[in-house]
Length: 377
Image (tube, rainbow, N blue to C red; front, side, top):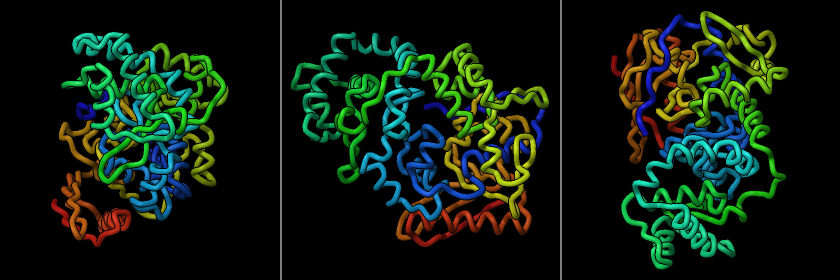
C-alpha cells in the first residue's frame, strides 16, 4: 500500500466538519459496547496491519483491550478479508455478501492486468479456489502456507506473487474468509461456514446501501471520498449517494459538498445536529494509526486534517489528533511495557497535554502493559 496522500487543497471547511466526523466514528462521545458494533458502524476497517487495526477498533469501544478484539475475530463475529480496496478489511459476516456484490467487479477490473502478468487466467484461478474450498470442508482451517501446499499439490503454481493473488481471488469469489489465528499465524476457513446465507441483492441496491452506511459511519464526506474508499467510479459513487438523497444531508460549504447522516447528529447529543458544532468537555486528543478510518476514509478531503491546511505530511506515520486535526506523530514499541513516543508539530497547552497523557494511558491499558511516554517538541 502507498502512503495516504495529502488530499485536495482548498479553503478550510467550517470547524464543525472534523468534529462531526469524530462523533460519527465514535472517536469522541460514548464508545460502542462491543468490537463488532464498532466495525458494523464503520462498515469496514482497513486491517492489513493487524495489530494497529485492532487498536482502530478497540479505541472506539468502551473498556476494550486487545484480547476482547482478538476474541471477536477468533469467534467470527468480525472477519478479516479482502473487500473494497484490494487489501484486508475487518467486516461483519452479515455485511460481507452484499459488499462483495457492490465492490468485487471494480476490484477485479483493477487487478486484471496484474493477474495477466502473473499468468493467472480464469481457469487457474477457478482451480485454485476449488482446491481450497474442498480442503476447508468440515470446518478445517488452513494457514497461508498450508493453503499454498494444497494448491501446489493440486497442480496450481503458487510461486512468487501468485499465492496472494490466488488467495484474494478465492476471498472475492466467496469461497474462503478468515478463521481464528493459530499462534501468530492467520488462518482461512470456508466462507460458507462463517458467513450467513442472505438474499441476493442487485448491485445497484448494494451500492446504495454501501453509500448510506459509509456516510453514516464516516461523514461528513464527499463523493470522491466514497469513490476511492470503495473502489468505485465517481459516477457510481454519485449515483449511489443520489439514491439516498431523501435520507442523507447534502451541505455545500466553503467550496465543498459534504454528505452526512441525520443519525450522526442525533448521536452527538442535544444541540449537536447537522451544521452545529458538537461540544465536548476539554480538548479531544486521539492517537490513530496510519490506516485508521479517520484517515483512510477520506481521499479528496483528507487534507482538511492537516495542521497547515496544505495537506498531511508525506511521512508514513501514525498521527496525533487534537480536536480532529493533525498535531504530530507517534509510534509505539512493545516490551514488558509499552513505550509511546510522540513528536509534536505544535506546542500543546496544559489541557491538551493532559488529554494526550490520558490517551496514551488508554492505549497502554488496551495493550495490557504499563506505559512509558516520551514527548518531543
